[in-house]
Length: 103
Image (cartoon, rainbow, N blue to C red; front, side, top):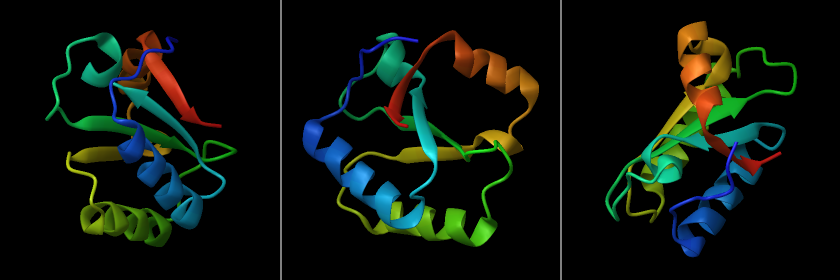
C-alpha cells in the first residue's frame, strides 16, 4: 500500500460525501494510475468497493451510487468496482499498490 493519491481535494471530498450517502459501510480503495504515478489530470479514478464482510454489495445500492457519480460535478470518470464481483486475479493486481480512501 502507498499513501500517494493524484486527486484534487475538492473531488475527493465530493466522492467521500457520495460514498457516505450511498454506501456508508463500504471500505474504498483507489488503485491504478492515480496511485502508481502514471496519471494525468483527465485520468480515470479507479476505486474498488469492499463491503464489511467482503460479500457482494446489493445491486440497488451500487446502482444508486453509480448514478450519483454520473450526476456529480466530479470532472473525471470514476470507475467503481465491487471487490466481491472481481476475479481473484484482479484482487492480486489491486493488492500490489492501492490507497485506502475510506475505511
